[in-house]
Length: 153
Image 1 (cartoon, one colour):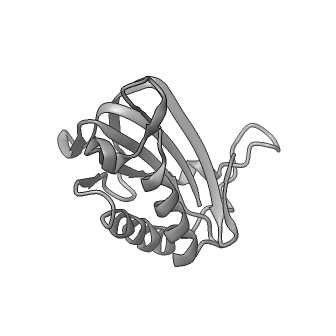
Image 2 (cartoon, rainbow, N blue to C red; image 1 turned 30 degrees about the vertical axis):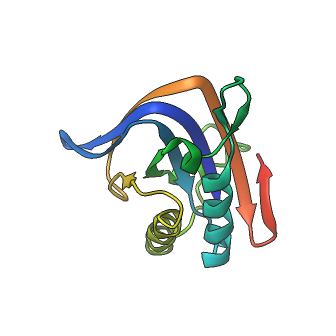
Image 3 (cartoon, rainbow, N blue to C red; image 1 turned 135 degrees about the vertical axis):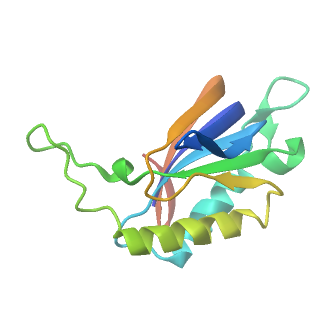
């Protein structure tokens, strides 16, 4: 599982002219699912992201979590995070999870996040989406995980 986590002041996703998800202060998460991923991997990724302390405290140090600041989540499925561009000029997506598996784990990931965050918004799985955001910082993290844990990409 891979995630691009962006600290935002606001973010939204639009499908066919309709806003399907919108948040204020929080994280925009672009989430990619691999064919080898499982619920255990999703649990670890959700737990790590929701506990990240990357909001500034009163001293300007990145020391506060989503819960500390009443933050929200916008989760957007992003199979292209598994693009392999090593050969030629056309990316291969062979390592991305099948649509059925990816959608199931995407939904599972969001449900896990709801244990920590009151507002979890999302895009439409498999749809062409327009994502709008105001990245605060900018502050962007790239995380990769599997059953053994999470590491920076």
